[in-house]
Amino acid sequence: MKDGAQVVLNDNGNYGKFSHLLASQDRDYLLSPTGAQVKVSDLEGRVVGLLFAANWYPPCRGFTQILVGIYEELKSRVPQLEIVYVSSDENLDAFNSFYGNMPWLAIPFSDLETKKSLTRKYDVEAVPCLILLQPDDRKEHVTVRDGVELIYRYGIQAYPFSNERLEQLQKEDKVKRDNQTLTNLLANHHRDYVLSHTHTGLKKFYLNCMQRIMDPVPGDGCCSCTQVPVAWLVGKTIGLYFSAEWCVPCAKFTPKLISVYEKIKHELAGKGEEDFEVVLISSDRDQASFDSYYSTMPWLALPFGDPEIKNLVRHYNVQGIPWLVIIGPDGKTITVHGRSLINLYQENAYPFTNAKVEELEKQLEEEAKGLPALVYHEGHRHDLNLVSDGNGGGPFICCVCDEQGSSWAYQCLQCGYEVHPKCVRTVERHDNNV
Image (tube, rainbow, N blue to C red; front, side, top):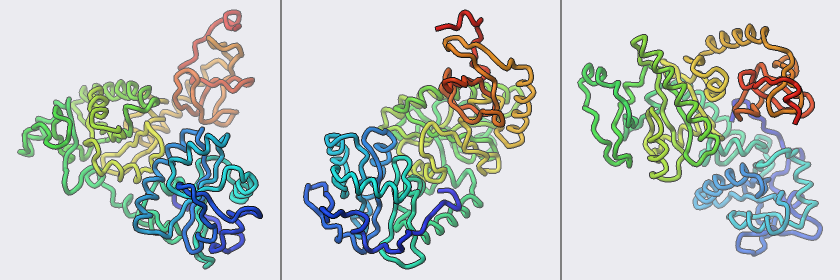
C-alpha cells in the first residue's frame, strides 16, 4: 500500500454492531461453508472483512486464493477474525461454485438489497474489493477500504488491519527503503548466491576474490545450475524479473526481454563492461515448470520456492506479472516500471534512470514532429490520428503488439483503437476498407 493510503472513518462510528450492515428484516444470519446458519450477532467483537467479488472475473479468483491462505493461517491463531462474502455472481449456480472454495461466511445470494446497500455504502466500483471493519467504536479505529492492496502488500503481517498497524508497516517500509542494498534484497542467512545455467563471465571475479569454483547447486532442484555469489552483482544495474511459465503475458514479454538483455550485454561487452544482469523471481507452481521456463533464459534466478521470493513480491507490491523492477548500482530501486520502459524504448532504455528516460522522451518529441498527423493502418477501417499525453492521448495498450504504451500514439477517434507509432503499417486508403 502506498504511503498515505486512503482510510475512511465509518460514518456511523459504530463498529461493534453489524446487524444494520449484514442483516435484513427477514434474515438475521449469514451462510457458512458447512451450510449452517451463523447469527450476525456472533460477529460482535471481531475484525470483519467484507469481500466483494465474483466468480466470472479472473482477478477475483486469484485474490480469493491468496486470501484463503491468509484467513486459514490467521483463524488458527486469531479466532476474532471473520470475512463475509458479498457476491456479484451472475446466478445461484455460479455463487455456489465460487463460494464452495471459501472457508468464511457469506450473505445469501438471494439477498440483493443487502448486497446493493453495502455496495453503495462503501462506494464499491470494482472487484475484488475488501473492506475491513474494526470491532468497536473507539475513534482511533478506521475502516480500511483498500484491503486488497493491503493483503497483496503485507499479507498476514497486516493483521489486525487497523490504522495503527498500517502506519507501523509504512514506517517499516520506509526504513527498508532507506537501508535497501542488493545483498539484503537477494540474500539471506542460508543463501548468499543466485543460480545460473549459462554464465561465463565470472572467471575474473573468482580469480580476484579467491572464491569457490562454480559447482552444481546442491538442494536447489536445478541440477544443471551453478552458484553465482550475490556479491558479484553488487555495483551493477539489476533487473528483478517477476514471471512464470503459466503466465500468458509473460510468454509474450519474455522473448522481448531476452532480445533486449542480449543487445544491452553485447553493447556493454564492446566497452569491456559487465554492468547489467537480470534475476528471475519465479512464480512457477512446481520445480519442473521452473526448470523448463528458466532453461529458456540467459540470465540468473533465485532458487524455486525460495522464501525471499514472497518477501520481494511484498516489498515491491507485485500484483501482476510480468513485472520488472530495476535496481541501480547503489542497490536502490530506480523504477518498478521496467516492463513499460522496455516496451517503449527497448535496449535504449538502459540504464533506466530518470535522466535517461527524460532524454528518450525529448527524443520522441523530436521524432514525433516528423510523423504524419493522419494514417491509414493495415487491417483497420478507420483513419488513425496522432495523439499525445496532452492532446487526447495517455497510457494505452497497443492493439498490434498488446504491450503498454504512453506519450505518442495513433488513435482511432471512432472506436478507441490505439497503436504505437512504430507498430503502424501504413497503407493507401483504398486498401484499408474492410
